[in-house]
Image 1 (cartoon, helix red, strand yellow):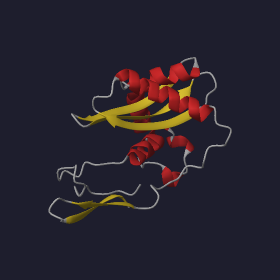
Image 2 (cartoon, one colour):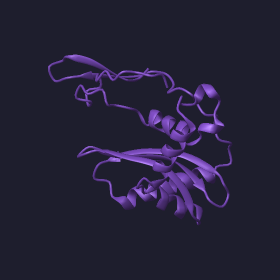
Image 3 (tube, rainbow, N blue to C red):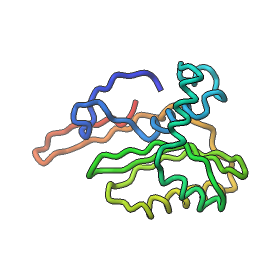
Image 4 (cartoon, one colour):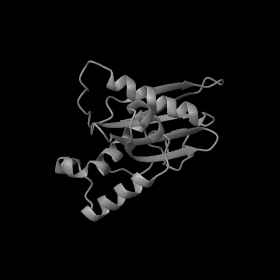
Length: 168
């Protein structure tokens, strides 16, 4: 993910430029938690003491991912996560999950309507992990960009047309 300055072009950003995709959030999580395992070009240019501090903070962060993971695995899990919300609009969570018995690791991210209950969010994590674990196909390789640009065309009641780019 290239360095960028917030532009606030997304209609839901209110001009603040504080919009980021789940892909981008998960990529930051991957780089923060798996720093030493990544090629140098994929690492953040930060000191190893900062990586350790960041990882420790992510491990302490409150999340529901751990409950869903432990239900799916049938044992304990270590979770590095960061939750967030847009009050009245959405809740999101993303993190690295480590099965404490098998050592298998999973990156997961989700965004749900703000009024989604904790029980539903926990069940989403559980079902997602069970689906991944029970598939017979191998995992796809990690994609290092967000893929092709997605554009959404809007037509207002007054027939004014606008366009939103979700990512480049």
